[in-house]
Image 1 (cartoon, rainbow, N blue to C red):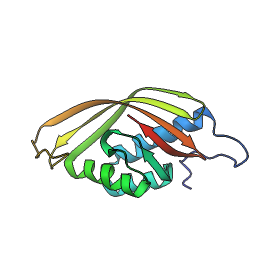
Image 2 (spheres, one colour):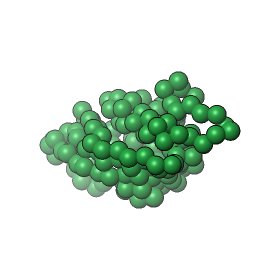
Image 3 (spheres, helix red, strand yellow):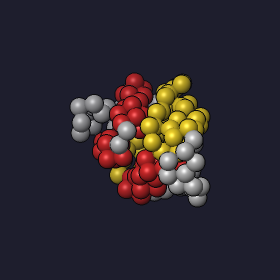
Image 4 (spheres, rainbow, N blue to C red):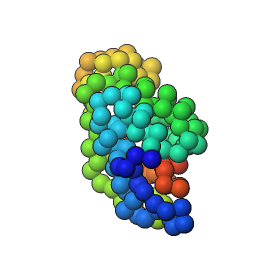
Length: 140
């Protein structure tokens, strides 16, 4: 496990701060990396192998590998100069809620739409569940 990922003992549940740090790591080091390969590497550290995306861009994917293809690869192929900024986050127990703004230039096809060359800005709300020190589920 990377030293930047949440570290915890197997004998205790993850703290609220560790859960929030894990989610912030995904956005900061993963989505803001500028690279699909780097985002994939960070996702290997912070997302559980059996990760479930209940809806949203991933369309209900099951498993980290399927989600990486459906979301990470697709987003980085379709948008350049990606920037994700967390506006608000709340953590309680094993859940972290995040409101973030995604922006990037639409340079490739995405969800059936041809590239427009336009800069887009999209606000999203996500809820993440943390299990055994990894992001195990998301809704949003």
